Length: 138
Image: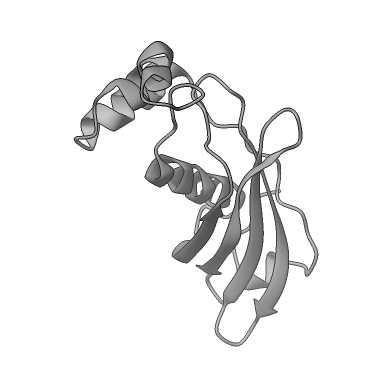
């Protein structure tokens, strides 16, 4: 269900699961676009030579994925803030499963707070955090 206004939101609602494109090709394109091209983002072998378990998904790309999940749920929303903790690296070519739940609603100001999590297919938390989203009042 797509959210249009603050009155469409219910406390405890789980947002639809979002699975972004974490392919090595997509991660490499993003890294080059932001000026971060190089082995750690563009090559599993190159990243391993730098001591990583594989090519990394840049942290800001992961935060973009969180924002995308929010906008798929509430296209009219304005993401005011995303605050994250990176517990473990997100790896290219590894599915990222993004989930979120509504943890607070301020109907007077049109603000929704979300708890968000990025896990892999082993159910290991890679990233978690919160987001504040402003929604139209009517």
